[in-house]
Image: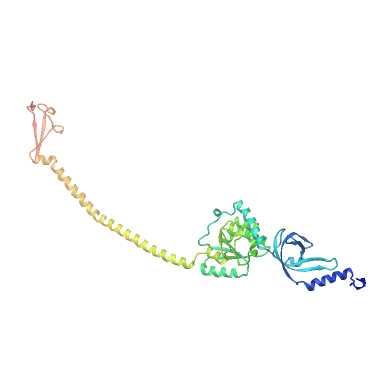
Length: 385
């Protein structure tokens, strides 16, 4: 082959030609599944290596784009990358410029399992630690994204269900690398709930992919939930989604709306219960009144039989009987019957011949007067053998 027939390039021209070839022949944007190796920030840019185990390529997230990225990858994280090729003609260097990066489900599940195992070992995931929800909370704090359809549904449900409860809305970011902000909000409520008179907290996030819920597997966020002093309800994602935050909370609701339903009583059900209670109270009052009326009737009957007049009559009759008895056994009665009483000069009755001496002055009392005598003779009664 003649050398003259070959195209001639300078190094710069060769690199530019390669760059033009890549630009014309490769997709402007593409999706890449990979694992992250050695991520590090240099001069505000995040440099990393993407690998599938068999091959690898360098990648970069420019500082301007890094501010918009909600997920910060760690070493060995499985990721999905939206990117494009960058080729530096001056040095013939090729890498992937990352436009967006998200964790793969395997990364999310690995993070979930790591934190779950750690908190389970420490006893922070334990049914016995769960606090009971108040039946009629006076005030509830809701931590969620504002504005959001989840919050709108929660507010509507709360108004329909139990409008007497005050609601405090504390806006928080719920997606991306926002764990520190969520943790700070939880710690703020833990310190200030007595001043705000809050007795229940709801941590909520609307639906999304499991990867979007990864922030609720963060260890610090979950520790803040586990140590929260009052009941905390989680309503994160859909019914099938389970995060570590759900495991350490006092009550896990399937959705944000379900969290409000769990926190508040049902107004209609309460009305029915109150009506039933009212019926029971009326019946109970009727029964008590009936019982007391019967008792009063018995007392009235007892008073009728034991009235003061009747008691006086009874005592009067009793006294009359006593007087008759006394009259029957009184000395005057015996005197009227012909008996007499013999007394000495000291007016003491004579009961025996031994109480009298000869020529002693005696008085004989009869029914209509007294007879004065002097003893002339004393005869003792002979005792029979």
